[in-house]
Image 1 (cartoon, rainbow, N blue to C red):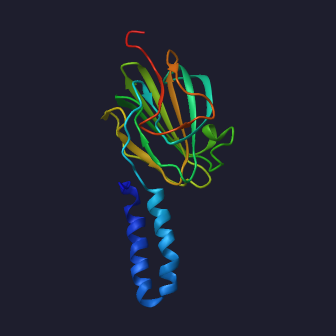
Image 2 (cartoon, rainbow, N blue to C red):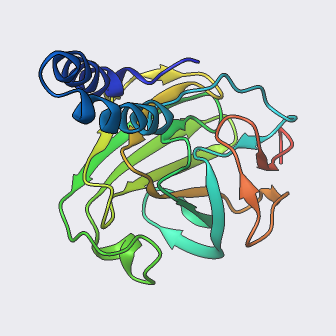
Image 3 (cartoon, rainbow, N blue to C red):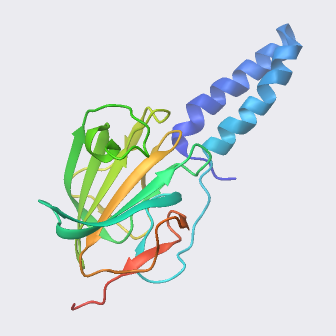
Length: 206
């Protein structure tokens, strides 16, 4: 099983504690074995293959919002909110090939990610992407359990469709803003998978 590199320190620490406990406190070692299993599960990073052409989901989870919006970076856009529970794969992926044009970290609260205002008041990381279909915005949102957002991008980076770019530890929420001309292929309540589920598409030239 492939693991996200952000989990290596915690996995190594847990293994070290188990080995030490076997010598000094065997019952503790037995208790830590299932803990290690959970940690490994939290940081799993399976390979993904797209179901078809179009914008891919940036996160595993359930769609909790689909609405129209109008933002400075994107203009008129479709907003799709994806709630990631603690058992979801936490790795985030690019929805399409594009160049990073905007990066903005916004400090904020740690409300439950499914709260109506979480997208506006919680700690979050904004990634604006220039694509052949128009601007796309990704927003990683921290929550009550998810205390750390990981984003490895720099302005000017060029990433391919489905490429990993970060993660939200312990799950939370990712909002994606797609061009208004996108023909959506998902519905509210649907389960989606990062790098695999197609959210919608745009025909070149539209």
